Image (cartoon, rainbow, N blue to C red; front, side, top):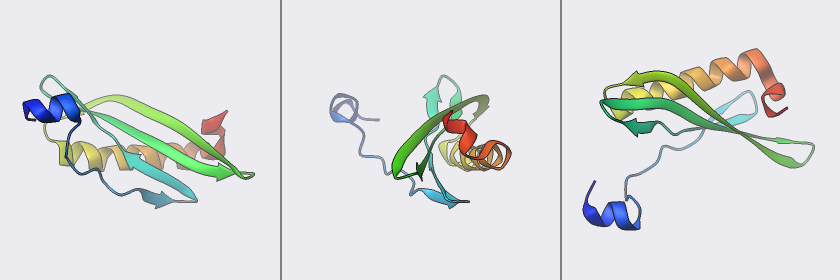
Length: 88
């Protein structure tokens, strides 16, 4: 990332949200030394209220694209296992 990107925010495009069982998944892997850590934001509207859950996992990948795919996969698994209880 350029110096201006660091100072004023990156111009990198973020992935579009992925819909899964009424939830929206935003892949948000985190750059770390040596790779990218799995991370995602999961959103759903429940009883007219927007709920958000941040998911972070210990898994890391060498490149951002693979980390984004893995983030979506892990988020889908979490949704399938927990459903709306992830917001409790």
